Amino acid sequence: MTSPTPTGPAGSGPSRRQRFSPRTRVQFGLIAAIVAATLLATWQFKKAGDTYQDAVAEELRLQAAVQEEARHVYADEAPLAYRVAAASTRAAALEALKDDGRLAASEYFVAEQEAVSLRHSAEPGSIIGNDRYLDDDQGYDIPRRLADQEERTPAGHRLAPDRTMRQGDSWAAWGRASLAAAGAAVLAAMVAASVLRPEAWRSAPAAGRARRTLRGIDPIPQPATASSELRRGTQLHLAVAVLLFLLPLLQLAAASNEQRAQAEASRHALRLGAAIVASGQREAFLAQAVTASSVADIHAAAREASVLYQKDAPAVRHERAVAAAETRHASLLRRMAEYMGRAPSVTDGVSSAAVVALRARPEDWPGMRAEQGRQKDLADAAGDRGLYLAAATGLAVVAEMLAAAFLASGRLSRLGWPAGTATASLVITVLTMV
Image 1 (cartoon, rainbow, N blue to C red):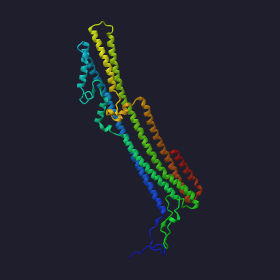
Image 2 (cartoon, helix red, strand yellow):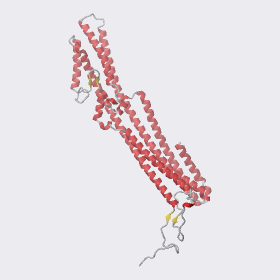
Image 3 (spheres, rainbow, N blue to C red):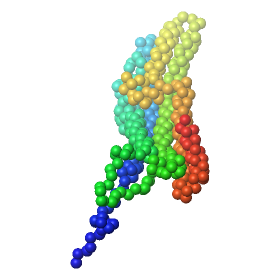
Image 4 (tube, one colour):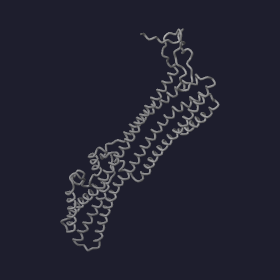
């Protein structure tokens, strides 16, 4: 048995599925574009935020490695290396006098044995375990030792948090481009809702055939098609809808700015801490070495003074010769201290992060603290901006509900309520973004 063929109105033939009007299809298309661009921007900003956090984690590992290597080289190895170099050069300074008297012979033997014993008891891979870093006239090359130590632990020192931050900035830039596309779609929806198609663009239905177009389904308020008494209220409804589309986009941008500023504030705090610790280690070693050279000069001057008024005798002349050799040695010790405790540079093979940390001085710290504080203030401002925009969104939602309710019920005299609420939302938005 054949089922009957469905028919439409009398004389119209078989019914066909009705389609949305072009205006409705344009609205759906623009809403889809807005949603797609917003979701894409959300994902891109999420990737940017994750990358910023990766940069903070890399900065933490990098600065921890810088501090550990600085502690090991300048606190553990450098003082012993300076002592060995001082003993070796003292023995060399007294060697020519050791056959002239017991004082020089005894002091020479003590210095030589100290240097030999310390070097022989050291691990072959340590700074004093071989002559790789030794310069007979200047002592040990501490920066080169630091560079070699970094090469032994490359995982921490080869991190590049700055490059990772730039990758995050690239994701954020794509996110802003997506926000711009979404904003353009919102503006297009507002314009499309406010204009009618020219008469020449409208196609009349074929003769004898009913129009199969669904009209009046408008997810976006359409002032262009509203009646004259409802047009002003519909315009208000459209403005509120546009505000609701735009506010989430602004919130996404504020959240991304907050994430970046927080990451930068954390990185600057880590750099400041590493600079204080690492440069403090180097400065402490340099101060100790310079003090040791000053003490050696004082000892030499005291020895010279002890025989200043003694009668001329071989023993007195010998002691004066020893004092003169010790004075020259004290000057050498000062040069060695300055050479071994000098601030490293990239030409020494030291990583740029270690160079920045070790060359920092106390007068640099206020500026570093100020930059860290500035980034923190930027993060706080972006966070506050996001909270205010959330409040503005809440007011816009209330305004949209009131406008829809009063328009549906025909109570146009009550549209002042949604208008006032929308104005408050707009004022908060403008004040937040200015």
